[in-house]
Image (cartoon, one colour):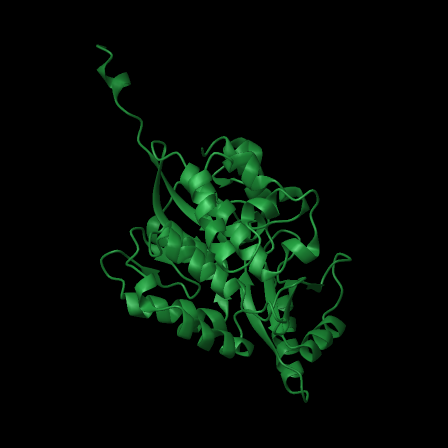
Length: 354
């Protein structure tokens, strides 16, 4: 052997990148931006300059707060920009010599972050869109959301729970003044959106599970439901076509559609983002399943902050037996032996990505 074989560069692994949505920046994530991205001063300053123009606190200041506060960190006008800053900065840190990013998707608000990661929004357009949509309810929430499991203890979808949730939605909408809808298909969970009357009925009628569910999501409006028709209309009025570009990386949206650099209609991408995506259910489960089937990644990288999306990603993949995962035990065993799902909000797994 002359040694020439060992000098060949190692092939990059193909990865799907997943952007998180609201609810992933919590008490444990306080300081995330400074801890991992303090050196990205130009990127953070650009976000904070825009925030200053809107008379809103900068993400650097929010992240550097002495303590985590629900009233400060969870409202959409602050949470959206803060999560975008953390997730986008994480995306910049992915080792491109080691990983080839073959596609990008996201959950709920993570769709906006995915647009930025894929290059369909430049940095200025990204903070403009994310901050605008995140600030739509600063004068008062429109409805709310709750989450309820749709799986068994092995993370396999339970048809009985699906039937229960569907019947609950049907029956509640038959009541005067009550509205509730599927908001997000989230792996082994269903997120419901509704008005207060609908949410209270759902909380009363869905059997308690694990001393936690049904769980109301604090400071979340009725995203991905008809209750946000007005928000969609305002978004379309405020955010023009000039903000959007063809993506440089393939994008998978919340209906399972794929947007590519060569085939994407930019006007339709805007219409989906500010129209359908706002008022119709977001099928994160389907987005994940389409992404792995179409692009066959070696690994899945979940951007931070936090790791709240790890379970739903694994549950979505268990649903189609991807990575030969048939149940929670298969996922756990593989992750301990040779992790193929890497969450950048997990410091041990982060080291395998950056």
